[in-house]
Length: 346
Image (cartoon, rainbow, N blue to C red):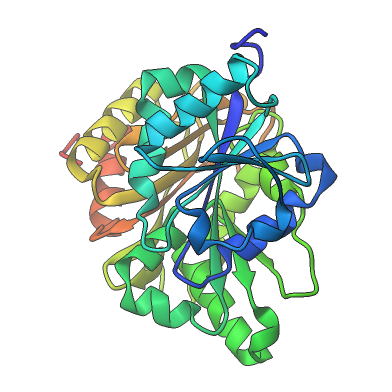
């Protein structure tokens, strides 16, 4: 087997206690298209996968009816992932092309994403897929307002699954949708109840394959549509406590070296506060834009799109983080990148 030919996509499934992560996982793993999936969870005793178990490989690994491999995390995350990969390579377990990591309800996803993005051994065999956050209608707003972990899980999501929609009325559902859209306008939101099945694309489509998916970028920059909803023109899309989503933008093309310098200084100064960063950059001398994205102090490799995703050919950057000052960030961006401005610190 050529270990480098097809990197394994590692998706992260998170959500607060009782949100319905395991219920979503049960329904996803029943789909034939996801039979070549491996799952890492923290404890079998705390989840409801028992009716899917058909064969025990050893104390940590079982095979599911769907053909998926399910494994406990009894050591650290890196060790669990590499152990699973080594066993596949040795032929002890069937080959998988996709990995789902289900976190505990109180987990902060950012350190997990950092491990997957930075560790050289993991990067050699795996590439980051979607961050899927489950939020339930009855308790979602309360959890976001009461627990920082819940707010951070929403902030870093690529996909938000609203669960238990049948347990609340239309007004409660709409209130939660509004809150999530303002906290993380760059994420796609899916509403599920007990009678609906989640789309396989939650795991099959990865937002990081952006070269062929300009529509994904269009969703990121749709945050601007929320402008003016009680915020004037300051572009502060939302603030929950000290977590806010904001938009930095520029009408004129910018120099890539100057932008890279600004971004490096921004991350150096605010890396711990920036939970998620996604942007579409208009570069001087280029007909098509460059996409950037990152988690905290980690910036992924930029991607050139083949075409603009919409008619507005301008730079737009969505930043979600804590304690961020949009006006200061916009001024520093302008100072570094706009020709009429003197440089100043990010």
